[in-house]
Image (tube, rainbow, N blue to C red; front, side, top):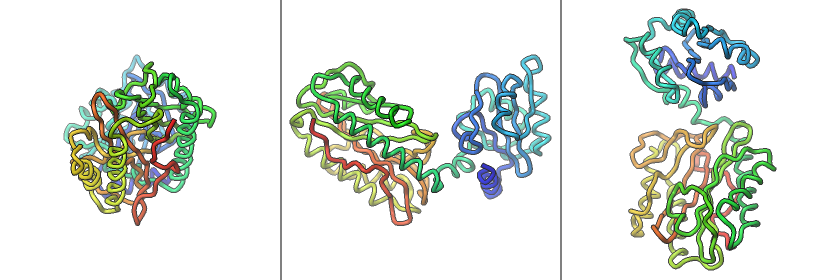
Length: 360
C-alpha cells in the first residue's frame, strides 16, 4: 500500500493540496487496506507531503494497531480529541495548511473539527486526490473485478435455472444470494421486479408472485475480495408482454451507442448523451428515468458518474456501468447493464452473459 500513499502524495502536489483527511470507509480501505471501526468518536487519517498519522480514539487503538504501524495520536473520552488533533497537525506539518481535501463520506462533525482548526484553508473534497486515483483501476483490481463479474453471471444463471411462474420475487432473490454465498462472495443487493414492479428502477424485492407474461428485471451484485459486482439482465415468464421485443431492442441499441461513445478523453456526459439519444429518438425519452451509469470498485456506486451533466473526463482504467432503461408504468420495466473497463480503444465488457432476455 506504500505505493498508493506515494501516488497520493504525487497527486496532492500536482493539485496543490496540503492535507488530505480520510475517515473510516472506502477511501481509507483502498489506500491502506485498513477498515477501522467508525462511530461518533473522531477517527481521521491525515496525509501531507512529509508526514501521516491517525487521530485515533484510544478505545480503537489496540485493535487498529494490529493492522498498521503508522503513527497514532490517541485521545480518550475523558480528554476529547482537540489536543490530539493539534499535536497530529503539528507533527505532519499541517498546522498552517492552506488547501485541504476532505473525505466526502466523513461525518460532518468530524470534518468540522478540521475546518474549525484550519479556518483559512480552502476546502475541497477528495475527488481530485484519492478519488481520482481510485477511478483508474490497476491490473490487480481489474482481475478481481473480472472474477466478480463471473460470479454475478453465475448467480444470474442460477436464478434463471430455478425461477418459475408461481414463485415470489423474494424466492428468486434467495437463489441469487445463495449462489453468491456458495462462490465465497457476500450478497450485496438483488432487485427482482416482476411485471409492473419492473417499472420502478429501484424496486424493493417482495412477495409479488411471478405470473406468465411477466417481464422480470433482475439487477444483482455481490462482493468478493473487497470489490463489487453489478449486472442487470431480463427474464420473461413464457411469452413476453406486448411491445416488449421492440423496447428491448431500443435499450440494447442504447447500450451499444454508449459503448461506441466511451473513449479515453471523452467527457462522461457524451456517453449519457449517446444512450439517451437512442431512447429519445425512439419516442421513449420520458421513460428513461436515471443516469446511464456509475463507477464500480470497492463500492457499488463510486465515480465516475455517467450523467447528462457530468464534465468528468474518462480515462483508461476507469470501470463503470452502462445501464440505460425504459420504464413503462403499469406494464413493465427494461434495463440492461454492462460493467466495462475503459481501454485505449474503448470499453471492455466484464460480463460474459449476452443481453438477450431469458425465457423461463
